Image (tube, rainbow, N blue to C red):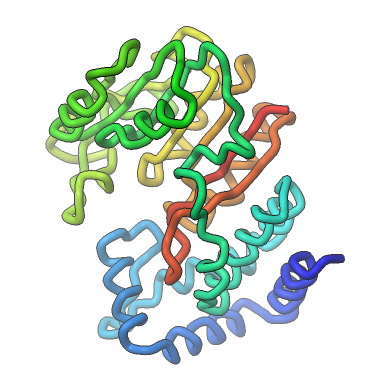
Length: 308
């Protein structure tokens, strides 16, 4: 057993030795021992981006801590499963760093594992060049991932861009207009055809979401129905709708075995649930994790799933 395995299973054994109330109190007390600046930064962050639950000392609201405790105690076996299905120790160290942050507010390990060489989604040691690539970008924003893909791999057959915010959609088209064979679709992607509504985030359009109620309607589609040709890559960063969208890609995953580049940080369950969803669709995938987030709380976690 190497040092990363040892630290991971020591953490697991520590969690297993405590009941859910003991784990909650341990995390609660560690949060209250943080310096005021870090406490305020975390409270502000969860207020701006409420994916993980709310956190407010003033309101005596610790929903976010309850949510992380629920995962650490009730889904520990799922996290062990993920650890044992990750292909390299860089990925395993990252998972250890994430769990250490959730449990112990460990900021140092996150700092060590931040990716400083490759761009988000495109670790060239993992993600191979594919001839005649058909790249599907869910949550294209203003085209940053598309431009990064072209910069890394240069040629492709087709790129599909999906975005839900109209003014961002126009910027996307403007920023990528010099490149051929790109289709732009102002649509939300989910597990069924229908209508969703735009929920705007005050912090910026990159965090806008498609939700069930609202005033600005958006067509909802599935990738299985919206794209008929073979797909080689699917990237998702769609603010917590990744599980729904993945279900709507089921036939492409089963039949095409595309490379999957998925954000798994918009709640406390995606990091283990999404890999299990993929394995249920097609068993021959290899999993990697990479990190482009910050040192205070683990965001910008990418699951890279490579068909073997």
